[in-house]
Image 1: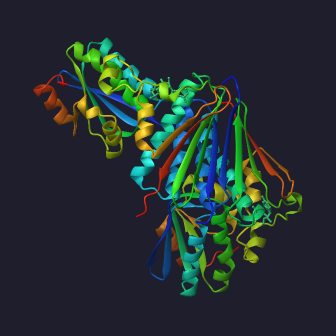
Image 2: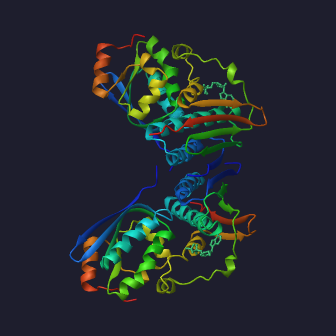
Length: 143
Length: 143
Length: 122
Length: 122
Ligand SMILES: Nc1ncnc2c1ncn2[C@@H]1O[C@H](COP(=O)(O)OP(=O)(O)O)[C@@H](O)[C@H]1O
Ligand SMILES: Nc1ncnc2c1ncn2[C@@H]1O[C@H](COP(=O)(O)OP(=O)(O)O)[C@@H](O)[C@H]1O
């Protein structure tokens, strides 16, 4: 293709919409040329990012919006998840290991680690209450 | 639910994206509470509207954007398809009957009629080259 | 995830059966159009379109039926349609296709109809 | 179109088998959490989670396993997992679950593991 393909999805901040978001990502990553294995990774990374927005940035408030921007060309797929919620300092999040989490009976703390290992690049731009962005990049491997 | 649920989808103007658009509509109409039969009608009406944008408003040019807005409450689902293409005068479109179309070997001319019969309300706001909107409404039938 | 559509061809007596599978929309209609055009080019003018595995149809798909029906009938052939799912059938009915096309329950019934009435009288 | 998820319960010997079907994400995880909590409340502490029909899992689903494992083991029980599809297995592996949980090929192998090693040594 000769120009960049750009897509946007905006949905209310409820976990019910995660399925819609995954459909959206799957359609796009398939068009971009990722194989089934990479598509599964992209789907999961974006699900995790959006679940965090719903649960943490908006603290469960359902009247807010989650925005997902996606664009791809021959080389990369870029996906950005945008919220207007409270924001946070990603570098301040303690990455506990699995055993620690189990000992503390924590049901959470796995999402950000997943995103990191599923994507090639992950970058946060935080503007609390205004605009918080999680930018993710996955490169297309040439066959 | 107590507040309106609002969704937006923006995709490049290619027929390949009609499948993504149908997924989007199906997820939303299911959430809004439509049954399978009504979901099929909504899916088809929006497909027709977007196919017309891609084919006619943008005349096949692929670098443009098709926008679909959807919102629902307890009573209605509103879907608006927006383009920035050439626009047209909907009242000037001759609604040929099926036999006429067949005789002229026309493969088209059925989409707008479908939209009219599938939706409860259909309204065009045309602003050529700027913003053309096709607003469609379907009411939820109370069980 | 690419919305699949395909046309499978088979023959029975002097009839060509085109079985549609998947989603027939503005994106995939050209494939169906090509399939019918090839039959015309090969002088196969008695076509059965088997829709038993057709999941979805939009007006772009319906338009393909429209574009060929006059020529086929002028040449002594016909397109007869069968095995519509309720979802797909609803679209044919909204647009009044049953007045213009023979629409049957399944392939055997359609083969029989070709024997009884090679061209639908409209 | 609602993304389906369900938990089906059965028993074998003194073991409870919870079979997960469909999509386990932040929306459906509470249902899985409730299912395990009910087992704990009823003193059923030897749980097999059969994932043969689990299509998708995100960290919210994985967190449910995490939240109960310590208590179950303290009480002499365990959660053992089986029949992961390759897609789901990949997620368990990225997060290092095989170090913390017995993950087996199918239900019979998991029943056998409970006989051989009631609690995984970690
Ligand atoms: N988008 C976000 N907005 C605000 N806080 C966040 C966001 N994403 C993550 N966090 C914070 O980082 C922590 C770790 O996130 P994560 O690894 O995804 O685990 P979990 O969401 O299960 O707690 C969260 O508990 C939360 O405090
Ligand atoms: N969104 C649109 N922008 C510009 N022209 C349109 C649009 N929608 C419909 N039209 C015009 O109306 C005609 C009838 O449309 P329709 O009934 O959908 O049939 P078809 O698209 O198959 O021609 C089209 O051929 C086109 O000229």
